[in-house]
Image 1 (cartoon, each protein chain N blue to C red):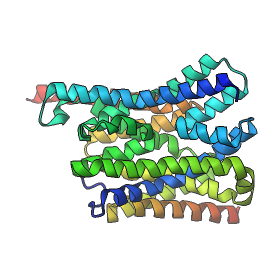
Image 2 (cartoon, one colour; image 1 turned 90 degrees about the vertical axis):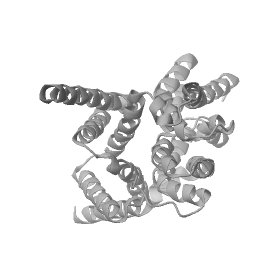
Image 3 (cartoon, chains in turn cyan, green; image 1 turned 180 degrees about the horizontal axis):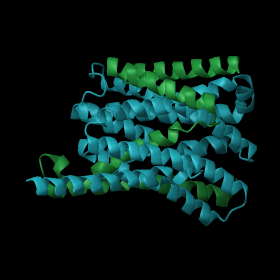
Image 4 (tube, rainbow over the protein chains, first blue to last red; image 1 turned 90 degrees about the horizontal axis):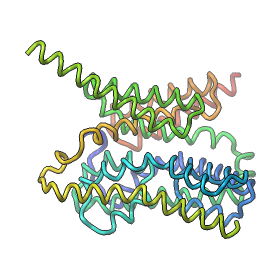
Length: 242
Length: 115
């Protein structure tokens, strides 16, 4: 795949380079999380531990909001796991590129949406021996930036957001820019182009309608359905013409 | 946090980790059972279609600005356009993202100065 540059650096350096754009998206959101958690009554230490151990943005916001509002604890658990259920499909998709090392399942703690998107593009381009180094480097930088951002938000979030409001407005654009670069090479045929466009538009519309947590799985299902519909249509046309 | 909330947090952390790790273990066993040299052939087709559509959906969700308005949509459009133009030229990952964020920021600042 020619989606990204040829890998010239060591896998650790390459992983770090690839993960750098994530910081623009992670740190402002982590600062917001730290600030909101402390304002909701959690201590700075508890807030940092939530980020380090759960490490899943949307569900962490839900977790503190539900606990703070006194929701039943079983419901908090169910909702957290439901939001994170989309992660079920990430591991199987990168499994063909992973060795049989027993460490890989442990390393899946770092498999966030963004690390999955990066790994799905980068792992096939790397030699098998380099993949674990690349993954650990990229995932560790993302994880640490999330933890450090949370700590900064918990301790000084209010001051930072009031002093540099523009920073929090501009830096999160790094995430859509990164996803765009990862997606660009996949527009390879009419079938794939339509599938991608429908997934993107559906997700955007669902998000604007306020369905933030279900937007990703629902939009992806729309895309997959369209993919199979187009495939059936192409097959039927092939049978008529053939 | 009292003890019950600590336990809840640990349960959420373990549950989230299992959602990420168990499917990987399952797929590795599935691939070994198939013992196919080209492992891509052992992947269910729907799964290979679902992965890019999930990334496309993440992109769609991330496009929505925190404070929707004409200026943020225009900045998103121009930032995205520059990102893709730089990607077409460099085929790299870092530069398109840097330039895209820079253009987005410049547009946001300019529009704030104008209006």
